[in-house]
Amino acid sequence: MTSLISKVAVGLRMLTVTVTLLAVAACSSFGMRHPVPAADAETAALVSSPVIRYWGDELPKGNSEIFSGLARSASPKFLALSGGGMNGAYGAGFLVGWTARGDRPKFDIVTGISVGAVIAPMAFLGPRYDKRMESIFSNLAVQRSKGPGVLAALLGAPAIADNTPLRIAIAQVVDQQALDEIAAEHRAGRRLLIGTTNLDAERPVVWDIGAIANSNIVNRLELVRTIILASAAVPGIFPPVLIRVNAEGKPYDELHVDGGVTQQVVLLPGGFGSSGPKLNGTLYVIYNGTIEPQRDAIQQVSSVSVLARAVPSLLKYRGRGDIIVLENAVRARGIKYMLTAIAADFPQPDNLFMASPAWLNELFTFGYKNGRAGNWQKHP
Image (cartoon, rainbow, N blue to C red; front, side, top):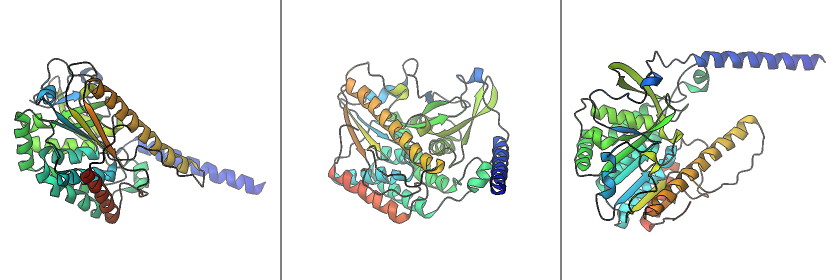
């Protein structure tokens, strides 16, 4: 009886500590915010900016320039890069291998979500950026992210890991020269799009990076880097990103996180409507993850082990759903659909955000071999 009472007492103390930690966490240490009022969410914009972003869950209103890439050529080529953490080494390797194969096209539209957003500018600018793409993942693996840790996150820190290595990598991806080249390609009718999630509005946002690069926005280089950082800000792992906006002449901020929270792959805002003229084009989807089931029996059943298995399964099937919806839409418009993803039997690390340099090199090489061999599949 005494033993039972002791166990109950210990359990109550643990519960008290947990509730206290969660209460403190509710008072986030992210700092004082000025969020956009709900009534102004539709009109909030960056100061003196052209149309540079769209809600990702609805078709743009009117005759938007974002669609110009669809009719740029008689046989347009589109590339969509998914999220996936360090699995992005697969997509980077695939693109470099595709270059070596000799038939990698110049894409009319390139889109990126999360780690795909990091790769997208280099994929958009072409093979001369392959070396840069290869070095990014090597450097990210060596520069392990350090941060406040799980306990500090429970006590109110906005994330477990520091995003400094990611910031450095993004600055290397998009420098002033790359930004100027993106602007020139935008003027030629090509489009580079990146997705984030507006956490305040609980909606996806698609950013027209070429329009920003080609604009007169004073801090356009920093803005592009901030958008890519936001797109790759996995909630709870990396800090969310504040983006300053104006609404009704007053300054506010929006909280943006990983675009993969709301959509794993994207082609155009609104999901690319299935109605419209037929297009003799091709959509290539590089999915930085596995889409096939992977058997891995849970040996020790606990809330942690169940969640550790259930959450990745949820994300996998969410990604599959996004892929299938996009496939059906583009096929209805006469567009060929090509997909590549990591094979289910390729070994995965325990933590995709702390992967070893050796594992990243293996994954990059695996992607390279698939790209060079032209290994595409036509269905998930």
